[in-house]
Image (cartoon, rainbow, N blue to C red; front, side, top):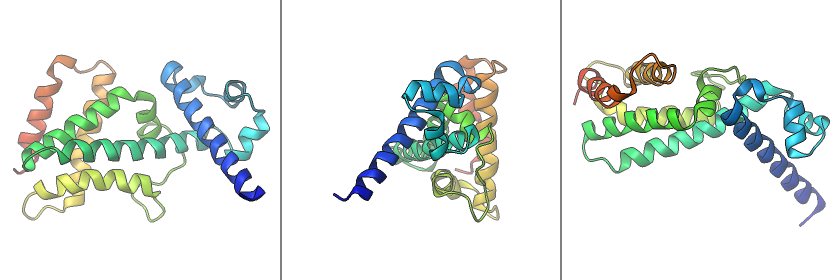
Length: 192
């Protein structure tokens, strides 16, 4: 292995450590607790080393969001691949989405609430975000209904899921009705 390859591997390892540490700190104490100073202390590198990887907290949030989008896409596909039939796939998708949001609140915030400097629904949208949307579209596109553009339907359904996730987490919706909300959403929006 060349010196350049070793240095590149070490750099990638440091970057993964920074992202994992930021994510862990955000999940434990919220994103306000994530500062370059605290990250530098936790990973035992200087702040300049952090800045050699990320220009600041915004880019770190973006890196966490991309990692989360990849994980969400995997979770959605795993949940829907085990379901039989369009209605079961849509229900599994909705439940997997809401479960992901509940289990990973700081990552979910990085993906959809905070400014991570990432472009959505544009030509320069990063691949992990495109893939997460594709995981939704793959299932929802088949139940959009006649004359309804699949991507537009997916956006509307996604917005409903995001609203459910956000309002439930904020304590605005009683958690005991979560299952019935998913059933109602699937029944009323998806043409199955």
